[in-house]
Image 1: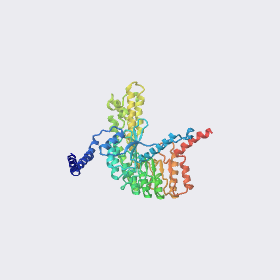
Image 2: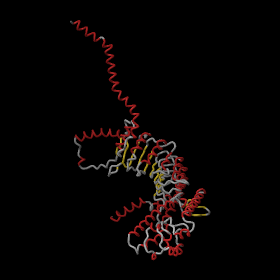
Image 3: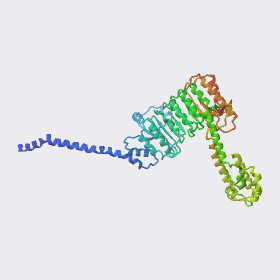
Length: 556
């Protein structure tokens, strides 16, 4: 019995080292393979996933939309959308805090230290930080800092950013932009809400320095920051041409920050050339660059009356001829064609016969449309009135806005007295709205090009009044000496005198803030002291401080 029992016991043991063990190994490997199959299968599925983002409808919640689009694009680990961290409020110790902490508090502080250690690592993880509106918690600004933004991520942003109706600014700091991804980013901007006006690209040096594409004529960017991008004189040349040329001018950009770059005298000259005909830029920073006296003198020159070049003079004459021909084409060749037939005035929509009629002979009040469409009852009476009124017809020569307003007033104001009703009121409203529309249309045509500004002729040369629109100029920490300061002193003196003579008139008066500190001159330099004395009453910040100090001084 014992041998029979041992035989079957040995027999199953014999194949175990051979067949059964190997089969067991096969089954275990099969189980592992079965567990690994879903992981390997996900790869081809992930390649087909990028088709799905096109079908996804964004909800307007950036956190949800960005996560869903990243998942559909095949990303397994992607940055999270988090609120922008705020500094903690100042800690004020109370009297109770002077007591020794209890044992539980000590244990709690130990656990907090572990949490703070973990939070430090969390801080360095890539995130999409957002600034929210306090009222409705909508996204106001987007901050991406310190992680590379690829083409696919920009494609996701082009889908999830346009639904943000309150988006105002996009900040990209050291995100590894290239000239190609910059082009993609620029194409994204028009898709966003109309409230988007500020773009900050700092710490993103580009080989081709194609930042000027952000300042195209159709650009929506009003505030642009390009600090710390290694922009040299060549990049400054492209930016200066984007500000203005002889035939084009940027009218959307209000502030430009070019601090912490490598711009020298030549680059400052290119920026100055862009300021010659630019009448939109209000704020410019060239701090922490390599600008010396030659570049400083060029910048100071365009802020006071400067001489036009031969090319600019020729272009100015061409614009004046073109403007004159347009005005002649708008007005009739002679007044008799318009006066004899009672034709409608193309500028006012009122017939010339009605303009020459006297109020006491007008039996009924006519609206703006009725005056242009209906005929007078007595043709002979109209002819008699045409002769004395033909000399006052605004269709002769070039029509001015003052003449238009005066002629319109003669028609409407007296007619409101003898008749009461809705007719005169409606006509008056229509006339007012037409006046506003005509003024809005005519004003832009007058400022199409700064070359059409009033000029001064001296010794056979033509001088422009200079750029009086730029209000803030920052040249801190450059390489300017007292030679460059002389140029800015002449500019500040001219602008101060100009503002006094034109104090009652509306319009730009020049620099309100000029920063020249930390350059290659002594702070006690007489020229620098004079500049500060002239700029002090113009600086709005110093004025505000003086107003705040006045009540405190009076109370004491």
